[in-house]
Structure formats: C-alpha cells, structure tokens
Length: 75
Image (cartoon, rainbow, N blue to C red; front, top):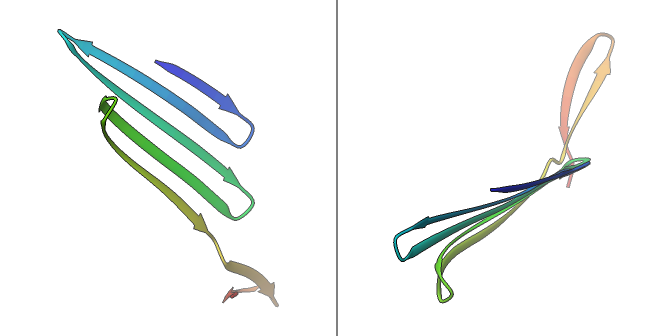
C-alpha cells in the first residue's frame, strides 16, 4: 500500500495479489475551500476496471446577524 498525503488531500494505492490474480485499488481525495474532489478506480486486469470521479461544490454561506445564523444558497 502506498499513501501520499499532501496539504489538500491524499492519494492511496493498494495492490493485492492472490495466486495468479492481481487487484489494484486507487483513490484520490482533495478538499480545498468549498470544493471536494474524489475519485476511485478498481482494476482486475489491464482491460477490466471500474472508475468514478466526484466533484462537489458547497454553494451555501452562513451569516450571523444579531446572534442568529442564517444560511443562504448561492447560484
């Protein structure tokens, strides 16, 4: 297993070998400001794999007025 941690996220790579089968798992994670980026890949062979990427942006802001917190959605 290889793990690389940096200021905004992490990269993780895991390889498992059993007999003549090899399974590889890769994951990337990054969070900065109001954005989250995450992706994973599972690979059984050079031509057999599953992959996804996810990008989430937090568009809410919280404001305190007279001790009350209000949430506002921006677009």
